[in-house]
Every structure is written in C-alpha cells, then in structure tokens.
Image (cartoon, rainbow, N blue to C red; front, side):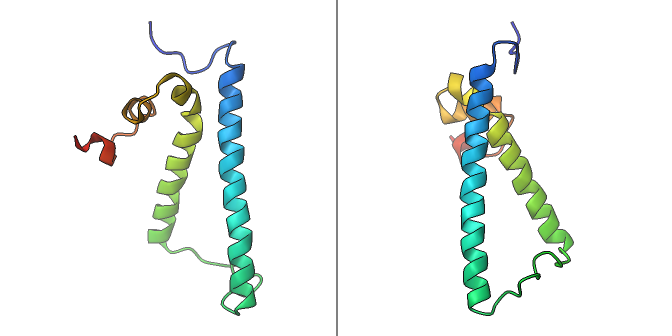
Length: 103
C-alpha cells in the first residue's frame, strides 16, 4: 500500500507538524529580535533598514533554498514520528543530498 501523507486520522500528525513549526518560528523570532536590538544599539542597523533592503539575487536564491529546507522539515514531522533513523526520515522527506548518505 502506498504511503498516504495525511488522512482523516492525522490529528496527531498535524499536531506534530504544528509543534515543529511553532518551535522553529519562535526560535527564529526570538533570535531575530535579539540580533536587531544589538545591531541597532551598536548603530550598525537603522530602524527601517531591513524593511527597505533590496535583496541581491544571490542572497535571494540562498533564502529560497533555506525556505525549502524549512518547509521540508515541518512537513516531514509526521514521517519522523514513524521512521526513526535519520536516513529514513530524509529519504521519506525527499531530501537527496546530505552527509548522512555519504556512507
């Protein structure tokens, strides 16, 4: 039988996804607030500088790649609940490049 990602019995899986997402978002928000505060205190960042920043193409590509990895992490949380080895989790999440696969 093919693996069905979510079905009518997926409340636990959705809960895992939500908790993974909430945890990751809070860590990022907390660290971002601290970094912005430190940079503003040191005069290295103007208050509206981030909102007005023109993002270079190379950086935009890096941000997009990180966004994709983040989405994979969150959406693979139910799989992590079933598959325990890192290699299995990465394979089920569709991640093809990782030091784990170097063996």
